[in-house]
Image: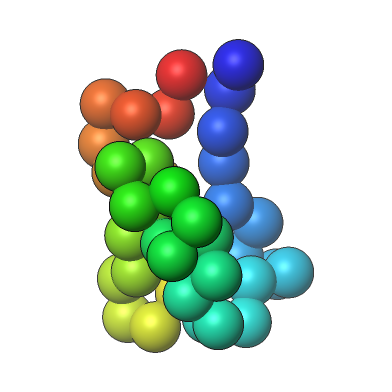
Length: 39
């Protein structure tokens, strides 16, 4: 599975980080995939 964050759709609520902290983080207030976890 390939995971990505669409910066046009992400509004920085932190929900993805809360639900899957081993995969997601926040950078400059927006969601991001932790390097090495994108697959």
